[in-house]
Amino acid sequence: MRIFEETMSIPLNSIPRGVTRETFTIEMSKVPWEIPEAEFNSKEGYLDLEIVRTEYEIIVKGFLEADFLVQCARCLAPVIVPVTADINRMYSWNPDMLSDPEVEPVSHNDGTVCILDPVREAIIFSLPVMPLCTEQCRGLCPSCGINRNIEECEHGFEA
Image (cartoon, rainbow, N blue to C red; front, top):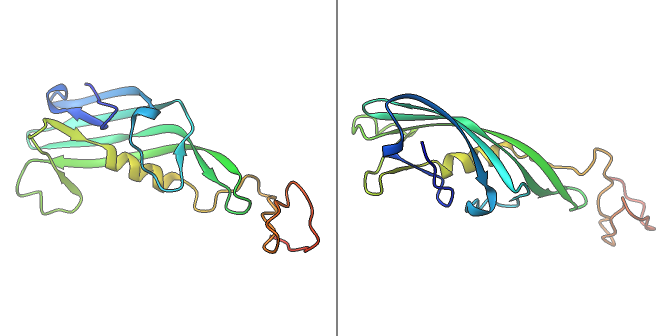
């Protein structure tokens, strides 16, 4: 099995019938992640996939492990977040299944199955809603904007 990192696509002709399991080392800078308020921090990510191919379906399960960089919700400092994003998606070229919103159509136009969207969604759901640099982060002063983890100000607000 092969994967094109630039599009996170798997060529259909590289997926045999039955169950295939493979781990890929992904060069993170090659992938167009486009994740709001987060960027990759790892040079490489690890994509572990189990793919089941039947006559009409391809089921993709697995996970991506990588580090992402986000901002602390209180002080806006950069925070490295290790992510293990679980992936689970079904693709089909059976017209009877395509009315199911959980099933992605397989296009034979380019001969690939694109897994970028499910991987991207899994990463977004794996990122913390309120990332903090530390649990004790004091945040920014709402009056003067000073990072209260680094220096004190005269306003005395608490996070």
